[in-house]
Length: 199
Ligand code: SF4
Image 1 (cartoon, rainbow, N blue to C red):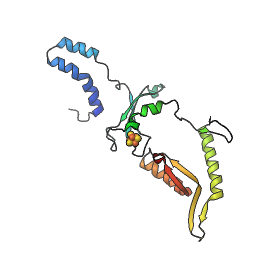
Image 2 (cartoon, rainbow, N blue to C red):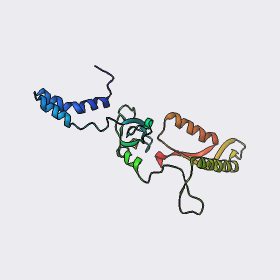
Image 3 (tube, helix red, strand yellow):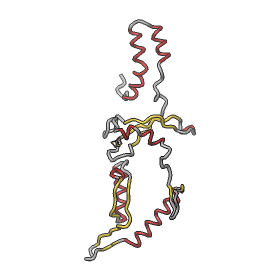
């Protein structure tokens, strides 16, 4: 017996096999063949599985994203299903209602997919490139930090505070990325730091 058979692999196999073997056990050989011919293929059989993390809250449940289309062949991937990852130590395959509705979030026409900028005085946001966005953010941060960084308090004690810029990070991340993000913020002296899980 193959002891490495995964739960998903087991379900794929048994989903197609249960009905047929039940009829076969009763001695209806032809009926079994007809039944097999009408069993609908398991809808996730030919999909690609991608592990990811639910972006909504700091529980950071593991999800598996199922997509059609082979990127290696230049095809466009289309997500058709998202479910909890049974192998993930945090959620063991479960998802709360927000996580269970992730596919709608991914496919929402209002979803933000690229940086947007609303110029001073404008009433609308305009799409900008990532380079443009990063350059602008870096410029504004540098100027603000140069103007407002507090190296020492009134008693002359080094405090290295930057209180005029805050940083909001994402909660759906790994411990390592969170560590690097926090180091980045605190290395600059940013005092106001939080993540979107508490927004
Ligand atoms: S599935 Fe629910 S509990 Fe889990 S990370 Fe997403 S929002 Fe949080």
